[in-house]
Amino acid sequence: MAIYLAARTDVPGIIVSQTADEDMPVMALRQGPRDWIRRDRPRRVLAAVRRELAELEQRRGRRLAESALRMKAAPPPGCRFGP
Image (cartoon, rainbow, N blue to C red; front, side):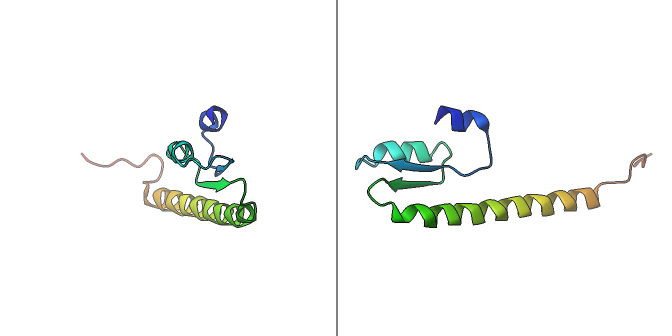
C-alpha cells in the first residue's frame, strides 16, 4: 500500500483480500484504491478491472478537455491587460 501511495499514480488500485473483516479493506480504500474484492470471489476481478479502466479513460479525457478549455481561455503570450 505504501508503494502505491508513494507513486501518486492515476492507475486505479484494487485490493484483493482474504480477510472476512471489512475494517481493514475499508481503511485502505480511504487511502486511494478504488475497489476491494474478497479472494474467495475471483469472478469479480475482471469486472472490477474493466470498470476501473473505463473510469480511468473518462478521467483522462476530462482532464484533457479541461486543459484545452484553459488554454483556449488564456491570453496569448505577450498580451498585457490593464493600464
